[in-house]
Image (cartoon, rainbow, N blue to C red; front, top):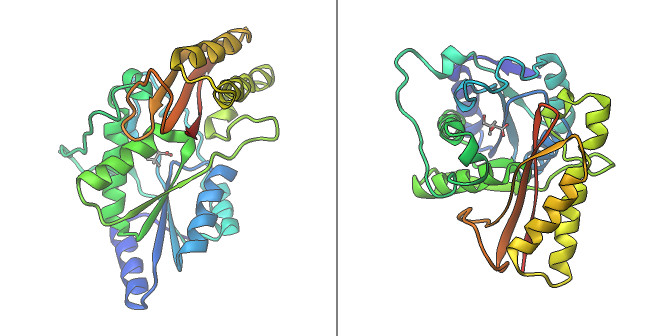
Length: 281
Ligand code: PAF
């Protein structure tokens, strides 16, 4: 698996592929890859001639008290995972390659970032959009792949790609789960065995919410109440938010209709986990 560290090396490789008339898919990641990331790489490899994967723990999307230093890193493992899933090139820059001195330009979005994670992680989406925009400009992909697990991130990236005319097709891919329902996440590695068992409450509670909607409940507050009561039954869980929003604009809805995102963030011990489902009525 070829790993490059500089923007110039990515550009050189991409320009060779373009001269050969090849299409390019792109999967941005922060590394410590799991089957969720691999499902994105597999999809890209299916739909494109070549797939670039970035592995970069992006410092500007972490707040001062977040887990930037602790975020798990293992490039050797990531190389094997990319290879196995059909990727062709890893871009693994140093922070100084992405953010030279006096870096002062950002992609900032409103509306889709007001609620959910945006409400409690004020600089997070500015950091995500800025790095993703930079990576798009470096890789110049035809298609880019994002997991629905980070649903607000997906909606926000779709929005800036549309608003700022980035010539890339954003492809959403379904959440990949452990056999007990826990959504795959690099942060699951922070959980001790008791917390890991407790974490299954996220998907269980969302399933109850989904069942309520499927049985005809349309009142968002009632769905939130069902999910909240279930989450509260787990002593190790502390709710950050339970929200029902429209998936396009990430604004609260009272009545469930159209494409609706039901999203939760929950602390299990010190680890903050997110999960969601999207339902279209
Ligand atoms: O979803 C992630 O892992 C990150 O937010 C992303 C899109 C790679 C940007 O750093």
